Each structure stands twice: as C-alpha cells, then as structure tokens.
Image (cartoon, rainbow, N blue to C red; front, side):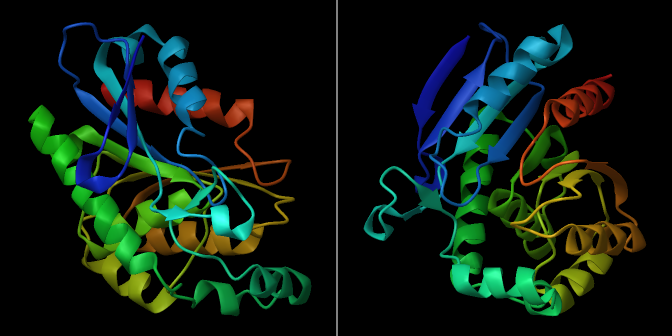
Amino acid sequence: MKNELLSPGGLRTRVIDDLGDSAPKLMVILCHGFGASGDDLVPVAEWLIDSSDLIASTCQFACPEAPVDLTKMGMPGARAWWPINMALLAEINQTRNYQQLTELTPDGMLTATEQLNQSIKELLTDRSLSQNQVVLGGFSQGAMCSTDVVLRHGFSPAMLALFSGTMLCREDWTNLAKAHPGCQVFQSHGQQDMVLPFRPAVELSQMLFDADFRTEFHEFQGGHTIPASVLHEFSESLSSLLG
C-alpha cells in the first residue's frame, strides 16, 4: 500500500492507495476533527482499502492536516481547522440551547474552508479528476469544514460524508443548500454524543434533504466516534457509488 506525503494548497496531506501504476477513478478526502493529528484518519483510509477489492482497485485517499497548530494550548501534535470555544460548547450541552451552536459562524472557519477548497482543486488538477469523482468528508470539525466547502464554494462531489458533524451558520447554509444542485450525503451520528449533540445533526440532515440532497442518515447507540458498524456501511456506500 502506498503512503506518501504531499502539500496541496499548503496543507500537509497523506495520500494513500493500493493502485500500483493505475490512475484513481475516485478520490476520497477525509478531514480529521479538532485536537487530532493530521494522520488521525489514515487508519480509516487503510481499513476501507482493505475492506473491498473494488475500493482498493479504484480509490485514492487523501487525509489533509488542519492548518491550526494547538501546541500552545498544551496539545502537542494536535491540529484544528479553527479554534473552538470549549466553554461555550460545554454551556450549549448543559443548557441544550442548540440555537447558539447552529447559528454560529466560528472565527477562522471561512479561512480554513477556503484553504481546504484550494487544496482539493490542486489534488484534482494533478490527477485530471472532476468534482463528481470526489467523496469529500470528515469527522466532527472535519465534517463541518467539508460541509462548508460544498455549500459555500459550490463544490459538487459524488458524495459528502459527515461523521459526527453538526449544523453551523444555519441561515447561510440553508440558503446556499437551496442554490446547490445537491449530491449524495452519507451522515452518521451517535445518539449519546456528548460533544456535538444528536438533535442539531438531525436538523442538518433535514435541511439538506429539504434542499434536494440525497441524504442517508445512520444513527447509532454511542458517543462522539466512528463505530465499526458505520465504517462497514460507508464501505458499502462507496462500493455502490463505484458500481
């Protein structure tokens, strides 16, 4: 299995595949969450390659590293797409005033999504791939960043994959989703998620569905994670997309 380090758009990116000399037919871009290392989702990419001969023979995976270094926050090796107000997030979970979360446009988010969008463009140009040959997604903050790229930058992937993401900047995203041609969406969320609550994730799914996105929502018993059951379902969705 090939694992190389590139920096499209200035983002340190692990690119993984088992294609040999063959060109990819589908690029799967997986963005990690807040506080993780840039390589956090590399094992997910490797598992997906091992899960299916079809995926292994057609897909190339890219795992970009978020631009914000959290070392000064006492988290060496940890990265973020934008800083998080942890006190506010704890207050939202305690009061269940989810409107504070879903109407929030975090400082630094627009800069991060612009850089991710540029990184994706460079990856596709280098491989002569089009937007509809991309699955774009991520976990938690990486899912939010991917959602903003699709909606704000008019990106049209074959699939948007959201693992434990949530609704942000509700008014902007709702209007942008209505103007977007839509795409397939794979979304998962734990019913006992104590980091990003379940209800706003359902609201995000409903908003995308109302805007003619082809949504597929996978809820599970558990917290802020990607369980094995969801990985198996995602592998099947990728295989169906390729088939």
